[in-house]
Length: 432
Image (tube, rainbow, N blue to C red; front, side):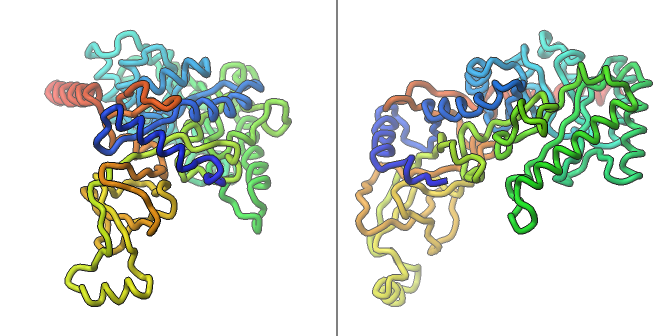
């Protein structure tokens, strides 16, 4: 992606003024609402060909942000990857339908039910709104035992391996097909388990080099593998099962490959994605060239240093300056060591003189930079799921001003949820 055409010095200077006016004098995560909307429009162009949309909550870990995307995209479907965040969503967004994005240890699932049965998130009904992801026969048998223990119905979505090879069911060998057959027969026979979907994640597709077939060949193979699992499922459970199954696929780097009018992908009925909406640098891939960066870190400049020196090597530092191996100007910022890359001022780079620092990290500047103390150095996160959680609130930027502050998941609400988890676990252990 050519981000130079979409991000200018004027853009960041305007954002700097907005942050200063809003009193943002510490490292701040900024989401540009207009850019977010533009990326969402691109996503909806695909979704509206006939797919349901499931928002990947780990990539947008903020209740107000999720509410905004849910309203704009007319969906109540979320994907969750972490037990405390699942509980947080069940409490704060009780109208949602939640699919787990990775298999949870059965102890984590048990903990959720004990927490919910203790009076938490009463308006969230897991028998209708919650789908556990299961990747193996052994885990399915564990969930079968849990369902009987709880005397409750558990909704199960089977993770299928469509080429990523990170686990899950498949039909590519006789042993794998035998395990899938056993799992489907178990689901058919057990009244406490309800098969509600299949999930095939194909994040590898956009990364396959052309020398071994490229993304088109990888995507074709992934869809063929998915269809093989569907055919296997209907052979065991009957074709009518397809009327009720969520056939989930997609991801931020692959969602543009789906088209409900295409024979290759028309059988998929649900696409999951979220990172593409904010565009961290890990998603600067050819399939997302039509998306634009929408989230940034703004870090105040604490100190400007001219002719920076290597400690204890003053004379050697002078020599390095003469031959151009040390910068003429550098700065120390408030914070640092994030999963992020500097994007403004241009050609800024992390200095190797002192190494990483999460307190005051040093960055080399060009000789013609105009930064002053208390200005901001801007970064693009490499991912959203980890980086967002390092900041207390998101500064929502629109038309030159900060219009709102949206808390992220590790706010006081999640702390109280964690305390409730501990209390529930202690009570359970005492009863046991």
